[in-house]
Length: 119
Image (tube, rainbow, N blue to C red; front, side, top):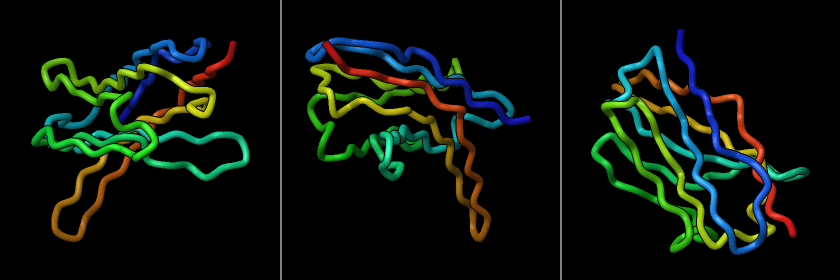
């Protein structure tokens, strides 16, 4: 059974920092691309950052220079370090594991963790 469990969300003041973690089980973690997505109330889910199995990274323009995605394959865990946070970063953050081989695509999601940026 595949599980992605996010942790580290909470309330932070503008300008503050949070570190999200995504612990994976039931998959061969090292071959999966890991992503963080977020969904604010009334908005569609959007990509925040992705780190591939070869550790290439990609970020949404809105978080470039402020957020850093990383992974530790030995711990089956992906991270999202969020600095200089803004109120518009408020959303539910979801972890995603993605793997594609030939015609098969495997996508798994965590349950989400709430991040609120407010004074």
